[in-house]
Length: 623
Image 1 (cartoon, one colour):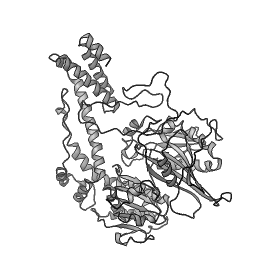
Image 2 (image 1 turned 45 degrees about the horizontal axis):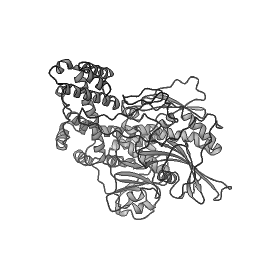
Image 3 (image 1 turned 90 degrees about the horizontal axis):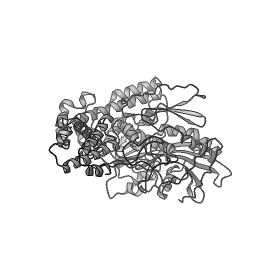
Image 4 (image 1 turned 135 degrees about the vertical axis):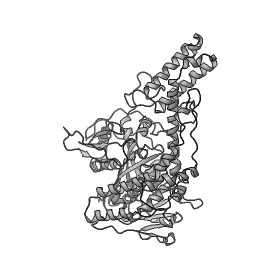
């Protein structure tokens, strides 16, 4: 496949309205993920400028010079990286026809992967429109970003909805219709929204509005919509937003980390002066879980365990839509625990990582990969778990449930639907859940209600599993009275697996979960998984930052003047430098410290400097 030359959209006013802003050439987007907080409270800071358009920086880092203007497309980049149009060229195959904004830089590898991921991998004679999604590894290293607020968003958003730093999400609207004017007799084209946000519901809804209009009016309409998105407010967690586009308003609420798990705090918007009626999305990211899981409902316990343990799973589906929805549904099973392994909702044989995932010289990676090409059944035979799906059909009865089959039976490309695995679950099935869902089907209960039941079940199951871990790791935090102002804070005690296991007898998941089984065995396997490593690193980072915050508060409550009485100038200057480092770190890393405390530390620094000889004061004021 060859990348065709991309067309650049014209400036000026588009047919659908809207004016293109002046665009300067800038590098593509990317955001560096901050490293874990250091254990040493007096470690050096890593100041970097951040902030929204028109707002002051959020830390005491170097500010732009006078007259500096915000980067163009800053608001657009808060939601999307770019929009791509992929077409089928008779000579080139899939070809990148257009990337907008035109200054956004994708590497050649990224363009190639997007082209292949934007079309069905295996031949489908079906005509019409198809929507699906993919996830793509960024190549070419970190890049500058138009949008400089990743850190603030990620601190406030749930861990499961954070902006990706190393991957792009692609949301695809593919159209295939007969067209006698085309050499092949078919019109085949995809409109792709590329983002770092996992807002599958929002972006697929946006595509339903935009794509049909785009296929009719082409570039001018796309340009106008991108300009509208560039006027949207940023996605601030906890806020309800009106997002105007193409003459209607999409209303959404961005989830926040402080939301109660399982709640849906979507309140009624003020809908005055909104005509036509707004499009209200109950969630920016949640799928219809019941529809996705309908052929595997009786095996939901097994799938939850496989995801918890980060096991390699192949989802073999008849279409990219079913493949991508199943993979995304599986990764959402662990909420509020973040799924820390890799996942690809849709993957093709042309992907640049194909060899990496199909090699037999090493164990399969910790990844859930969704595929449609039957060739993968042969290529990934050595993977331990394969979920083979058929076409999804909603009916009045419990959908036909796939069976668990031995991997040795997975030999033919036309293998029947089923879960091909030798895995034995640690926990028993929840028969009560299956009965409730079956009763709901018989009573024609709406799918969204069935999904809510399923989501609540998995939330409670995950919470029952994770709460004992949360209680234990909280006990490793040093006591507040052990934190003194003039010494580094005490270290968090190490996580000892055997000590944790001893707590389960009296404070284990059996207190909140009725499921029976080998919970201890499940924890032991979990400790070996990337999900445990990711959870532990995140909690350790948060606890370390809390210790740093408590240390700053202890300094503020201390008598610095008394401390300075018997100290040399060298010791006092050293204290000034360390306090400055801590102050910068607290602001740049947004430690959980009150603004009043930070101001007091600043005053303390000035007080200390004022006690020194004038020559030293001059040096420190210019340092």
